[in-house]
Length: 398
Image (tube, rainbow, N blue to C red):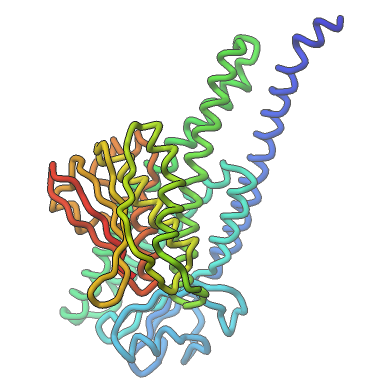
């Protein structure tokens, strides 16, 4: 009797644990959907003329003015589009605001920012919630663009204004297609793997031996890690953009050479496993005001990119003083290089030179975008210099 219990009890406990996990994940998905449905009612789209009068408001309220529209004033002042996350003075909640000039109007969109923070909380509790988040966001953007397209046809009979509005619509449509394509590829693959493994474990437990279960559990772990990395990168970008808008990051005096040394040590085990040599060029102390954690993350991202995609057998990392007194951190390889036509888009979200190869190697497509925002947060830039077959050099200047 005891031998029988000892044989069947561990698999039974594993199956019970997986079943309970599935139930909890489904429960989190239901709670997440209800939360987002409530938030969607607060999304607001407005058109304001240059005199401050509201020409259109998606809430249907006939208001002569907005009480909370700092972005409108900023756009009128210098003509540049604004995207910020801040506390709403009227709604008393954190909101994402986007405002831009469109002809004789200012288009202003307000979205509750708590949708993003709630998504992080649910993603940490259950990975299936992340897939629901992506699906709901895609659906919300799709419905918004469709509604915006219908509304554009009735805004004005003036040909010049219609051309400008249609141009904006084409940009939004292009963004929508790219977003749907990217999210579908990035989220669907790991979620499909997770659901498939869970279904096999739940439905075929009697026909599975220990090795089969171990392989399925490895699939669950690998795809969960991949999905979690994508969610973390998206949230990292959101935090960086908020920090750029609010300018709330506290910088301290740091030795950039020490930060480079730490980043190289963190990447060295991965390099050793791949048979790639990391070479740190000698440099004198370079002191700058910065966030050492973020700067270390940016350098690590560049090194990992070189390890994964360059095909080089050695990678050089260094820091030096620029003539204008700034610090220049460079990561150079001698690998396959990057085609010139791809370089202008390298730092865009989800952009990949070789999409199939990048996904096979486990990248999220957000690493270089994160590096760009970290450089901008430090008042600097990130650039790339490369040619096909001649390696590449990425340089952060702060």
